[in-house]
Image 1 (cartoon, rainbow, N blue to C red):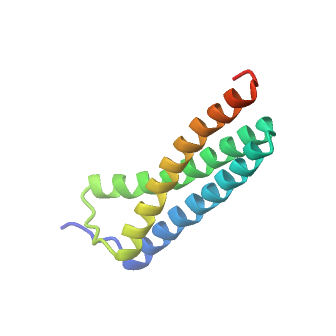
Image 2 (cartoon, rainbow, N blue to C red):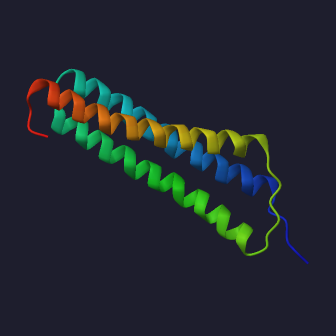
Length: 112
């Protein structure tokens, strides 16, 4: 018999993903602010911190996928859809921020 993941466990996982991706999003916006001020080393540091937060969110996501792969039934809830959406948009924002950092530095003549 296949066990079903509890709604509470799914919600905890979803909120963990939202928490870490939200932290990452905040750090990315802080990096944008640093880029505008041409403080590129600090911007890079913020992007690295954001990446670490995304990795933490991804760990929760991977745990969920492992549970599913092992045969555990997981009923999708709207909070998990939101969490996945939040994580994916934050990951995309990080990619854009890295490219923008390069462009900011190139525009100021800073060695990239």
